[in-house]
Image (cartoon, rainbow, N blue to C red; front, top):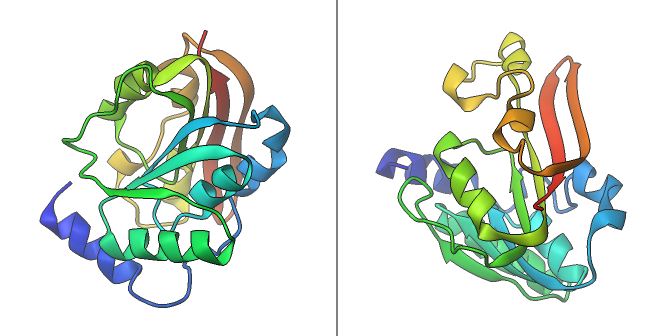
Length: 186
């Protein structure tokens, strides 16, 4: 990511309020029964930490990666507020690589960097879970997003076709359009 990206996200996360709220993603909440009671987790582009903190509250040792220091600061504040602990790491996700065979859980919400797909696959331990949710091409009908920031139809299914797909959905309901996946590494 560029300095411009860092500045953009620092600006978005500058306010005291949490732009996506303090509660975890609905997809994560709806599929909580699939989570183990412990393990190592990484939240890619974790922003203000709502999903990181939720995973930590479920017993995971969580690392929240983001390019925004403001987002990471708010993630730590949320963890303290919820009486849990996370590790925050400033990371440029265009150049930093993920550790191989390291995680029991990978979270990625509202972020798309296709070059990370192979690294995500390698980062998960066998049996590990991937929770991924982000915007689809249908979202372009409702927003001014760039096409490279959205998934094509069934793209997550194709990108993680070597995994066991546990849950999958694509939603197109004005003003939202996104794909959600829970997959397990064999």
